[in-house]
Length: 276
Image 1: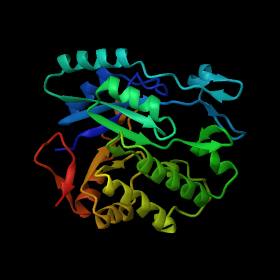
Image 2: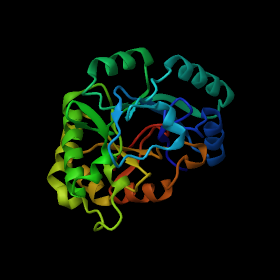
Image 3: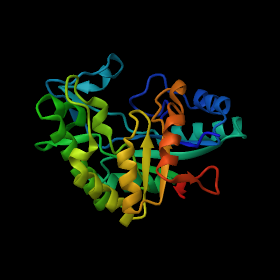
Image 4: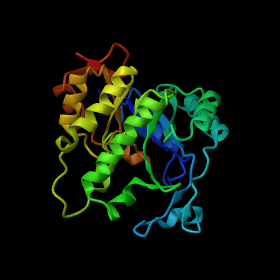
């Protein structure tokens, strides 16, 4: 049996065009998933488009004066569709959730949304970087900085988020910048920034939180090994799917990596994998 997919997006995320909560649930039943969590995006700040930024055609309507304005999460619409899908697919456990972007920078807004939503899965992510008094996507930093500097700065900010905001349970995609690793650069090696990785992982352990195995880019087994060494108690699996066909993508390999690192399913088939 595949594990739950605890990081999934639907039509309620601002950056999806093929997302569908209903069709994703149907796909989950086809795959035999025990459960999934719809963790749609909650973005709290516009992003400056730098010289190298590329905006897909589907998002051009959100751009004004070289600034991308992510749409606010329609919580009422999201929750109504969630309940409709729960009724339509009673054989599937469907968790409510949210993916908070940089909640430590927007603590009041993030906390208010959490209180309103009553989410069962609360993820936090670093997607943006500061550019003066404004924000830009992490991927844009590769335009003018050495790639390992981008990763280092990202990990420093991720640690600050874990240490500075306690309203989430799971750290999403610790390897987010690797998605945009430049062509022609040497292969990415997390050991280059072992200290920065371990600082993030220790902060998660100290606050009794969870590390995500996000399969958009396979998590390097070395990072999972450090997680166990630092005392990490559990992991969660995440396709980060933005369309139904990507649900549970590459989970078979992620399961193999998790088992090799000493993690196993817990007593609850809808819960996290825990240390063996």
